[in-house]
Amino acid sequence: MRPRYVESIISARKLRDSHAVELVLLWLAYLSTYRVMTGVTQSGSTWFRPGSELTTAGYFYALISLPIWMFWLLPSGARFRKALCEG
Image (cartoon, rainbow, N blue to C red; front, side):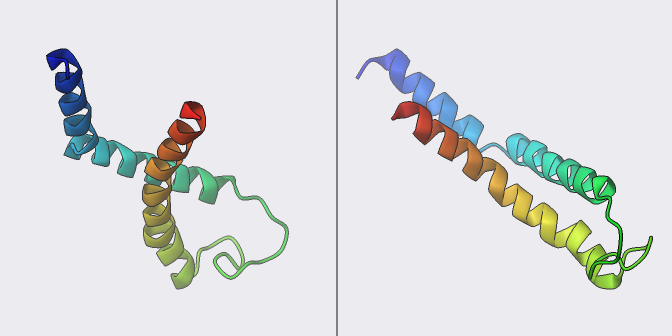
């Protein structure tokens, strides 16, 4: 293998495993959650927002469950797009 190719592979793996990238993804997950929770306009009540206020389950969903799901989904989406582009 060519040394330049190996160096670029090592560099890409370091970036992939970096804590900074994980923090950015976590920030994006919370930003996406905020946009979803504030952008939801519905008439009527739901299990997480029976009126204008969130329930305890709604807060758990908004602050814990949805961000964890988004944090897991964001890198998965990148891998899926890469697989589609490579054929």
